[in-house]
Image (cartoon, rainbow, N blue to C red; front, side, top):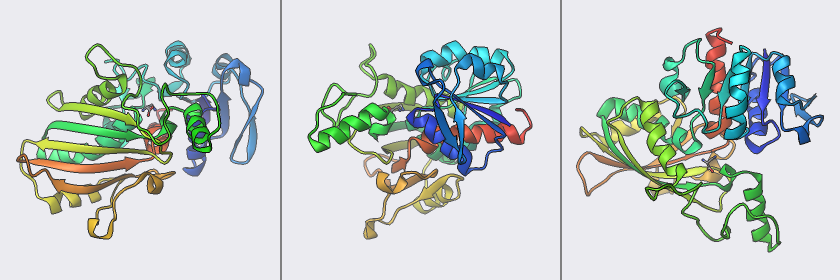
Length: 329
Ligand code: 2RA
């Protein structure tokens, strides 16, 4: 299968190559795509060099599927051109996520919504993916009415420039800034720009994408998203109000039986999910499972996942795997 990775030289694009190789996706030819300034450079995939090409050339090479992680602008311009050439696009930007004609997919939750006619498929926001994977089985069992989530997001979610800023600040070295504020020894309660309602784009992504993926307009979500000086992944404190009561042991059992979810929850042994342990893993880790004692039918959870993997690259590759297994590519 010919696979194009658009944005192959970026943080998520490079992780997509790693995950494609690790999961033995049946790639017969890799087509790394990047901006003109990177054309001609080489990327290594499964030990072999592949030359970076531009988007036009990639289309002419007729890939079966193109996995994009190149920003919303590039996706808005090029995803329709790839799709018009019969190439299925899986896009990691926010460009198509809330388009009513496009599917927004976490395979374990709603892959059944996909059809062979879907030629541009949206990969959800990383902080949404790890949360809905946990919410879905609980929603099916107990009926979620309201979710309150606070996130603690890795600088890797911003990209290389942010990682460099953190490392430079840590070493006391001057350098380019990804953030308006110092990030080392600090937290920044702003991810992306502020909207008129006082929330950030990141917060409203979690609100709207969750409802779309769970396919239930009745689920109310409110979010506060925060950037923290961490590398391994995103953490989330989630408070969930259900329509029905629940049993804690049953909640743990339901989650431990959910594909892609790992329960790490032994407070007496200081065992709970942490970014340093989630780093470079594909699972979503859940712990601190406990009843909210201030309100009936309400649960508190702590969810951690590597935002570059299940939060981006792995989820996109899993969508490609689903389509490939259906022979739709
Ligand atoms: C972030 N979720 O963490 C956003 C985009 N990756 O910055």
